[in-house]
Length: 252
Image (cartoon, rainbow, N blue to C red):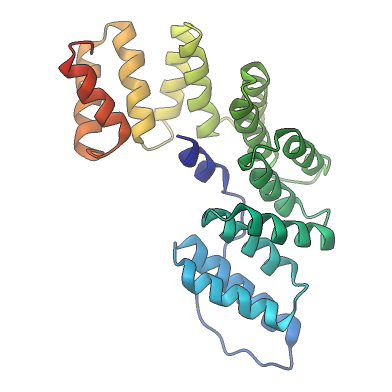
């Protein structure tokens, strides 16, 4: 679940064009920027090897290119290399400490390596800019970070704030549904869950939560429908394996 959430946290990186362009060495800054954007684009497509090549090329043109350092930090994070990721993020932060997108992604990294309080400080810094247009996403990240820290009350508060700023923050809706279900607040959980499924596609996690919520409500037909979807769409997921186990035991 943690990996899924982390992936859910990286939505604030800039988009990039994947079209190769002829780069003239005399324009060093432009060459570095173009390669950095190409690297980001390949990374977003899951082509990590090509992304690494472009980002290294960008840094070959300009070792202080903030975009290349930022994206290389994110690439190493995705590759499960936290020490390298931290090095590149910190180099980028030294050069652009006020970059709001960088601040947010650095906060995600820090939360992932369990430096929770440091991450919260970084997130809060990005919120100081009155013109920053993705504050809802930052609050959602704070909510996830607090959740992993085991502070459910603070997590709930952050998710609620995210929804105040943008009612369609799907991760916040799903997490609030889970929090309230765990607390035995079935009606609230059901309301948040219905809001979630009205705007988001199902995942193994959301289908499993749906099964639990509807089972608690006694909605047998809906439970059966969610079971079919979970088994059919995600046969190898941990949620399906747990469902099959509970069914064999007669518990669900």
